Amino acid sequence: MIHGEIPHQLTQLTFLAVFDVSHNHLTGPIHQGNQFSTFDSSSYDGNLGLCGNPLPNKCGKSESPAVEEEEKNSGSLFEFDWSTFLPGYGGGLIVGIVLGNIFFQKKEYWLEIVSKLGYKVADWLSLPV
Image (tube, rainbow, N blue to C red; front, top):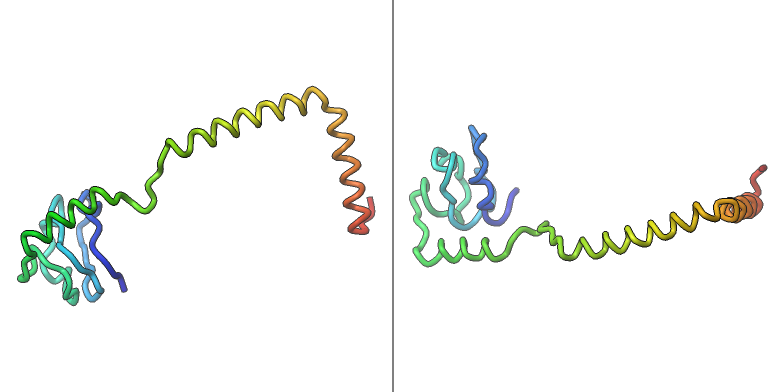
């Protein structure tokens, strides 16, 4: 069962031939646009909370604009904010370049440390080397 409102973003789809959300728990207005205007009322049967075309129960005038305004302001749950991502990516890139440079300049030293660590782990796990 689907609960809640029909997302406004679905009206942007242009390849829907059939749209059937009948017998769910959907509420709010049925958005119009693109192919949504072509679906008949049977696509929405059993959703007592839905209103608007093509259903006989119309939405109140104050309800529909408020819902659309809320959708514009709320955004998606999965909205990606680049201003949060870029500083972390930039910092990680700088740290990676610095550590990579140190590793390649002192390659023999790092390989010796890793080799000793590998032997210690093998001894601890009682593995033959």
